[in-house]
Length: 262
Image (tube, rainbow, N blue to C red; front, side, top):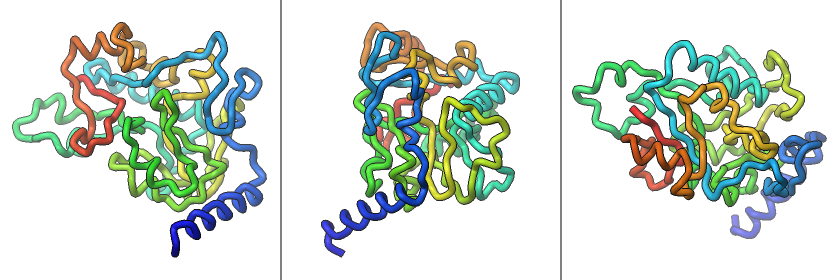
């Protein structure tokens, strides 16, 4: 199929999906009464909007425990209406735990520190500086904002899952079934999704738009640092200066914006 023909097909497919779903675009629903925005996800800034040239995050694994990790995950999933599906093949995850050998498979495992070897690492979308998922998406449903946040416009997603294949971190989930019946407590400030779309962590773009830090950061009580990687005076840069950190699969060249203190 010619390139132009493929583009035309996906445009038509995307438009058709809009008509089928009948749902308001997710981006159009972010904090609808609190902040202005465009369909591209570039919000009109106001006095309360938190801004950065490149948002990043540090997970301090030394501050994580069995006591606070569940509350961090719960805060994220409740804020974003992530369904609780028992079937592992169909589960949807924005943030979850992973063993070191799976989170950092390219790091030498020989004689690993016992604490690190047994630690459960919080993993999610890395909001890469060079995100392969964006290049793989034929409908531009996934895209990168100027501040480094990689977002999904669920209304444009045609469910091809090319982005899932392109992501080297397994950070995306696919709704194999209608997720709405599996949401335990619906948050009216964030849209629910539908069957057949991909979703992922969004660095709480909707909360930043109204001056709030990400839900996981708020629930972590200092175990997670969030800030502007491009600002040398920011807290996140100071923490990076003072601590040895690692990132997931850095050799791939995607430029993850999530760091881990081990």
